[in-house]
Length: 435
Image (cartoon, rainbow, N blue to C red):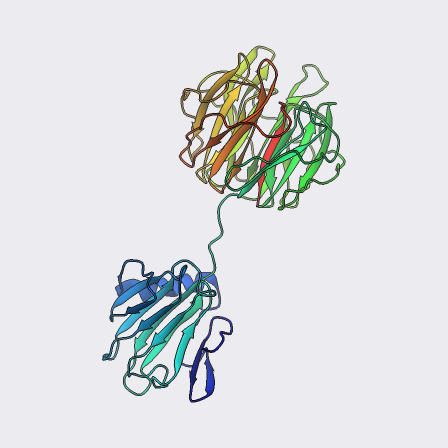
């Protein structure tokens, strides 16, 4: 068989190859265009169950999901056809580049070529729509295009970093929620650190004991960078989350003033640049937690102020504007952790006051749910981040000593039992995801 160039087909016969990719075809140039064309063309198609065999016979009017994960597939077209008959074939597993399809035209023509030619498609993600035009030109592709893989919402991997022990070490989280052994720390060793995502696929650690305002960027491969000179009020026990889909925000914390708690925020651009202080909104406090919700918004919740532990929340718009206090739901506490799950929802978990293991789910419109009975070891000061695009993980923390266990969160917000810890036991660390 002949090779494949791009998303175009090769037709071979009588010792020669004709490379046809535009003649008689309607091709679009963008993912959006392909999607629109696909929707229009597929409107009258009867879709069949997934085809995994090495051979199959197509029927006019049908659409076929062709899964070539295990083998290539030879497709035999109908022996007779009428003007306007149509068939669609889709690369179900995005694997045609490895195992392609071969079309047997079964005595009819294909783009004017007779059935002595071999027709192959071999590009991942191809959507192919063919229409019969009559005996002269036969079957003509009206769509022959590799559909771009849809971007995932969220990030696939995570990182825990810094904390009360370990000299600033970090621990990566795989896309299946497995925590790795310690990676030697970079930058100033500190605890009560906050962290969030930025740029859609990277992260940032910021602030911490001292107090300091230093930050450390995390690449989309999970590599932590050297100290970046701090911007804004030096503080520790702040919280941070993503907003706007590609930016971040640090908020609240414990500084050196009177009272020491603050409510200032600092926005993080989609290139990881931290901005100057924004005047705080809501109750000044330290030890809150924060996470994303609704794809592009954030929420700060819980914490401690002069009167004790609290449960109020403050929503963050997709422009990074912090809202006034929302009456708290659930157990008052501080030094909790929070992360996203299910692509558009969030979860607060664990915390101090006493040591708690309760969790509170956050809907995709930012409504905090009642306490869910805790799973796993009650503790304060864990970290939490997203992994696997739509799941989360809590790890580390302290109660009668430091711990390193973790608890996975499903994409339905269900917290799992303790997983044996990996890495240096510690608390008051930061965590974020990357991709």
